[in-house]
Image (cartoon, rainbow, N blue to C red; front, side, top):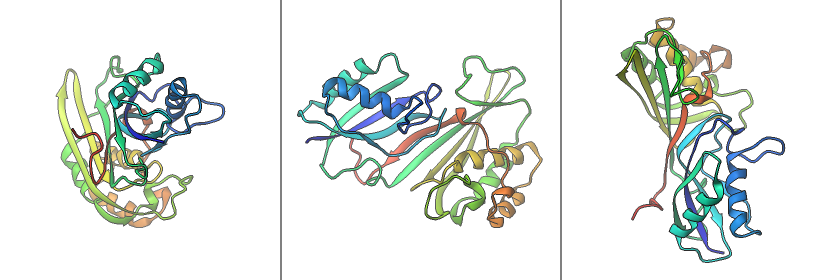
Length: 256
């Protein structure tokens, strides 16, 4: 069966996350149902990351096995036709080796979190960013983020429901950018690692927001990290500002 990689974009608001569930809609279910409009016996698909409820993606990667030898462009076009009206789009499809796996072949994942500071509620960005109504110090948040980079036991920053075998991970990048927008500022937090723990990025951002507000110091981030205790974490921020923005492979399957 020919195997294809799919580059997928979605708005996570109407979904209970990526992974198929019995009683709630998921992105995986939407894509699999579209695939089965093309081939009724199409097996289930695998993905690079299982995003949570309300989390978005600009570059999720999945793989599927088809009975027919599809032209990749025609496959993506056909899937997008059947994905309507879901807020899900296949940006590109590519033929890959039979043993290629969206999850296990990946070398890194990249996430971005959008935080907007302004007094007024969000209108156009509602559901697409986290709003706080006070100013934040970008430099202080970057100083706190720098303390998270490297190999650490991230017990403090993972959900108690996390099923990972170990809390020890290597965070390769933690970067905070700020830009002025009408009536406020937008902050974007970028994180890169081979893999992440459950709720790790949202725990990072919620903690760094406390640093940016002045309630915590950058040194407090180190103390929280070294505590290896979930109770030492700052507030976990909401999911609507989080995006899976990239998955790295030894060879990009979508490169021309």
